Image 1 (tube, rainbow, N blue to C red):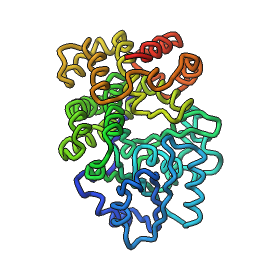
Image 2: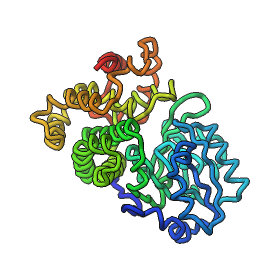
Image 3: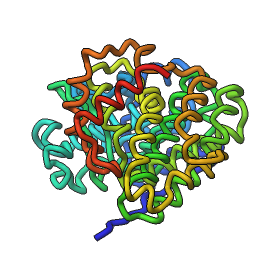
Image 4: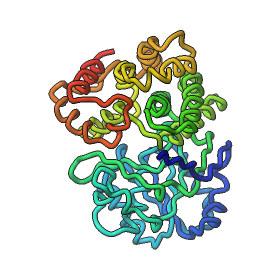
Amino acid sequence: MASIFYVTQIEFEFGAVKALASHCERLGITRPLVVTDAGVRAAGVLAHALDALAGLPYAVFDQTPSNPTEAAVRAAHEAWTANRCDGLVAVGGGSSIDLAKGLAIMATHPGPLTTYATIEGGSPKITAAAAPLIAVPTTAGTGSEVARGAIVIVDDGRKLGFHSWHLVPKLAVCDPELTLGLPPLLTAATGMDAIAHCMETFMSAAFNPPADGIALDGLERGWAHIEKATRNGSDRDARRQMMSASMQGAMAFQKGLGCVHSLSHSLGGINPRLHHGTLNAVFLPAVVRFNAGAASVQAERRLERMAHAMGLASAGDIPDAIRERNASLGLPAGLSAMGVERGLFDRIIEHALLDHCHKTNPRLASADDYRQMLEASMQA
């Protein structure tokens, strides 16, 4: 049986963040903990949200790492407890929003966070008691503001997914104005993350026609505007389109992702300094080639439909088009350029085979398949 759920309230407009206090009031949040990172604060973006919260007794946790960890969730929990908070406002990229989701569990559920990880059978243990969360994205990439999942590196070093409809933010405030100052390389990396979400979920064999339509439209928007947004960060239409592509990718990926994310989750857990969106961009060409052999992808002409959305002549052009786009955006030419060595392959493959995205790829990958994808991703 297909289970299809869409999704949460979304306020999408330039200046939408200005209504943040009234949204807290509507949701019964009287003492919010604002979860963010030092970069968002230093860039002046956090100030827009804090100005909008004037009059509420808020507290701020701004120590979100680039890849959220269980230790950072515990630190945020200390701030939550010390300030007697009753709700969360996440202001930042996917890391801040995912950390807030981890805190939404920890603040209201007993035991270590790992208890609630998807691959540990923890999803059904996450209840409606989860702390209410408003998500305010400041990048256009992960789409975590409309997603039911969070990715956290737990204490034993694994990069695990936590999934529950109770983790979906009660409200997503999508204000493209907050992304206008995003640096070019981060615009490119997060934008390719959004494009990867749209492509992977569209290739997934699961039955969810609404997700397919949303993902294909998101791919078309993202592919058409990522270079414009990267080269001219003040292009308001390009920023708006990329934020939409990001949101759409996450609205759709409830259907499932695949090998791109199995590999990037695994490698990102081994080396948390590697940017998730950049890894997705590097892995995409090899995974698209691998998925071309999937019966479901061929039967439904999914690659041809993606090629059409990307303005390409044929499905066979997709891998090279992604490599060329990565190069034009200034992203690394391959894993080697990111400092990844072949000696890590066994560890990467071990964790990729256990990742929650592994089984939703349209073609089930073996250890040898993953090794070939890694080798193909070493150089452009």
